[in-house]
Picture 1: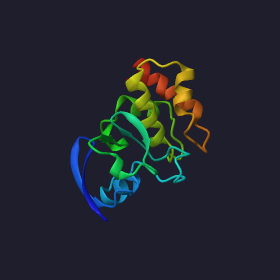
Picture 2: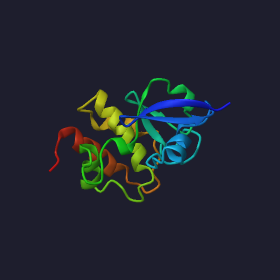
Picture 3: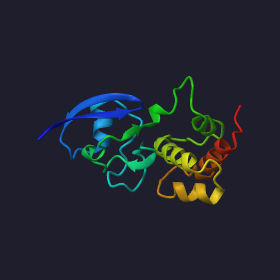
Picture 4: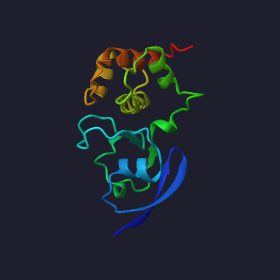
Length: 156
């Protein structure tokens, strides 16, 4: 039976009427028109759908909206804008860490969660944090450099 949920998304309360088992990804994309989280595999294996819930990375393709509770959801749209990208987004741009861009949003969200809990990660810590994310373009080295650059504040 559909239920009304009030979700805190990117600092704004948003109400939706959906089944509790509906994947959060579908609510974000279809109901709230936030297209940053991508549908990749639908099985929590690629990371394209990653968002933050209370600062923790979650795979929204398998995370039921009913499990969000009073949690705060942050999507890529909540980090910055095209006019004012976040430091991490700027680092991705400067390192040219996006090729096709499909995996980038999920990787940025995973990196954001890492930097929030460990502002100065080592290269191996960055690689571990991103190891569950798939990139067919092979931009992994540039992605790791971007995360390390953001952690060092080496941005114009």
